[in-house]
Length: 89
Image (cartoon, rainbow, N blue to C red; front, side, top):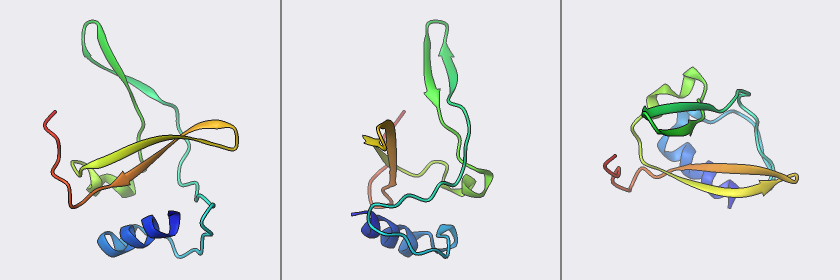
C-alpha cells in the first residue's frame, strides 16, 4: 500500500517526492516538531501538526488521516485525496 501511495503522490505532486527508493514498510522522516494546540474558542482547542515549509502548497487540499502504530508508538498517516471534495469546516 505504501508504494501505491507514493506512486499516487508522485503522479499528482511530482515535485514533492524525494529521489529515494522505499520498501513497502519503510517511512521517510521529513521533519521533527512538537504538536501544538490551536485555540479556536475559549473552551475548545485541538492539536496541530506542522509540515515543513516546502509543503505549503498543500494547504487547503482534502486529506484523510489514519491512526496506526509504528515501532510501538502512536502514528498518523496523512493521505492526500485530490479527487475528493474538501469538507466544509
